[in-house]
Image 1 (tube, rainbow, N blue to C red):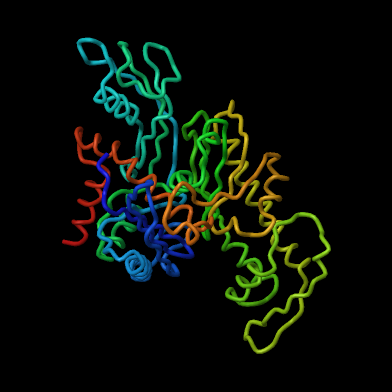
Image 2 (image 1 turned 180 degrees about the vertical axis):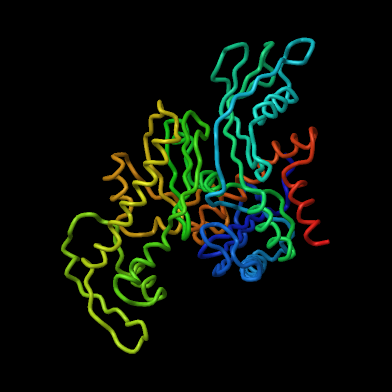
Length: 408
């Protein structure tokens, strides 16, 4: 793949919009610019206000441009939401060469064959990610190019999304003066930034807890076997605190960050006092850390139950997991890793972006996992969309045509 001078990722989230600019240096990918702005135009990953979303994108990109000293023209855009679904599929083709040696064209054809699925008219394939190949029945092949055989098979993970939801995001990006280089399902980007190769092989669940959604990606045997988005995130904790302590959302968010804990069990901190501003801001009332824990704990358990149900219902039944990785802004909640370990009965760690240089301290935070992951995963995911263009209009071409009808 030809390496671009600069690569930009755009994470348009429910609570914040984040832009990251990277370039290739002597030691690999380096982060050279980061920009962040409050996000007011999305709810649970879906655009609800075009103008507000455009302003957030412009503000975040302007800050990243100023730090990097370059102009952003193209971005890899992260998307999420309940409209994104996934499934696993199988493809098979005959090896075409006279010498029966697998070529790159055969690999492209078999991946295309795996993309033949029943799909509603209002949905598009976002990703077709090969998990493993087989040649003449010999499975477990990682890279079949150059191997001899007559029959090539592939197991792929297919991610689909609602065309209208994608079109609204792309419309905001376009009106902010940017071109969309590619679209990436956000938990896949977060995995690219935070997971180790060993974790992907042994079996791992990544939970990217954002403001409006919790995104799930499950890896085993080196490939992704399930991905999904649950419409519950950190904002629901803030809302519960505001209702329970009878205060504003802004005050509830500050209390959550200063005193919040996901611990299930009572601790010596429970009796510590918290001063809470009333709704009108003219007075304060007293609460305790124990009261706050009593609000946060049940909601965290509910989120974990939803995640477990998603895994039980949709992940492969023979799946063996070795670890849970928490990332996203919600992973910053104190004791969340311990609570997750107690609930799931697996080792848990908090994942931060790694394997990138440059402004490492600026982005070594789980809240930046998706944005950093976009500049890692995006360029490496371009092969599938390009091969798709040979057999018809690509996802991006179809959406651009749809948008051009709106703009004309």
